[in-house]
Length: 266
Image 1 (cartoon, rainbow, N blue to C red):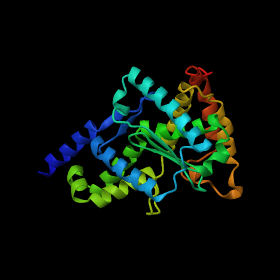
Image 2: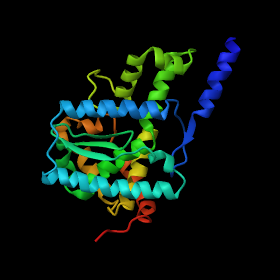
Image 3: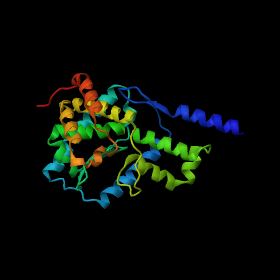
Image 4: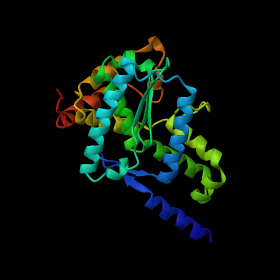
């Protein structure tokens, strides 16, 4: 019986592997998409109800909407044309600016994007904002949160079938979601992106912003500002996002590739 269970888990893990668009990296994704989308929607509405959303009439909120819509349209079109339509099939894009001193932003499954006002002094303009939003949307499109959540749940479940574990321990599953997506959890713990995931989001984010008509060179200026920010206090956006010479060097290396997708809008 143990051998049967073991092989069942192995086959499930194999079937749960997918590939990230553009980079082609193989990844683990064991959480059912329908369950992930429902959890994301619930937590997203909960977050908005507990935080001050900047009115849509605000100039800054309109900028977030404008950049978000351009990114969403370009990304959806690109993924559809290149065989990855499933990645955004259930996306209903929303973009909100929230009052907060934290320099942060995030994107949940389903295209729910939140930008904190605290990051706007670093983004400076629409190009800088496109760097941040493209980077966070890249995490969602690459399903990094689902990947981290799958790894954590698999570790917690041990030899127990993951589906049974998730069904019988919904609070543990919710905690894993909050930790993986860092959407205002009071747990005090956030699962950090691996350097591989973080680098992948930088890479994809450059291409996404270029597709939307934003100059990828703006990423160099933004990350240099972030690396010098805070007088020793690391902004939240960098707490699990190491900004160093290697990151800037990588971005500089990827810019020629991203520029192939760049067509400035009038």
